[in-house]
Image 1 (cartoon, rainbow, N blue to C red):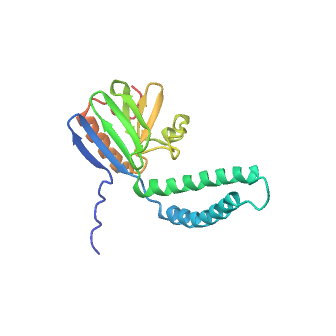
Image 2: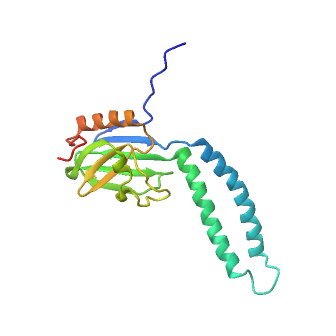
Image 3: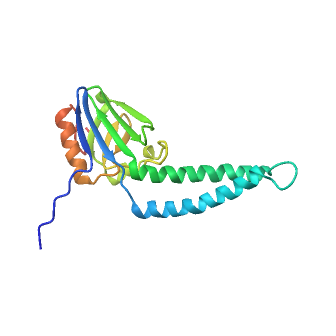
Length: 192
């Protein structure tokens, strides 16, 4: 029996002229990917079948309004499922830190909302606790998926911000140490 190989960081740290960029790939959940792709096969059949009825109605007056509404909701559901699969396969979290700003972007094909935070207000960079993860401040939509938390937390004013949702605590601690050495961020798990 050999010695287990140490885990490598999933994230990439890129030094830039103005600061640091940390790129964290989304975690691939293979069961969810395979299940959703199979579901999309049935979805596509339903989409084509109803679209045919809408484009070529049997009676006068066109397609019934309820059928048009159903098609719109069905299409939206399929697009969200497709976006979910795309996120797991190629999405990434991009954290950019400079002396004046910390930003977090959930990026899918260059699309995504960037949240910016003034560095002078960033406090207590730490491993996220169970309390941080269940905070109501983290239950807001961020584009294509919902932010259920992350491995790294910091206080920003009277709220808590989480990022690094697809990394393990050990990797999160390495990132916290690296960032706190490069930038004047207060680190710790106690309010101060």
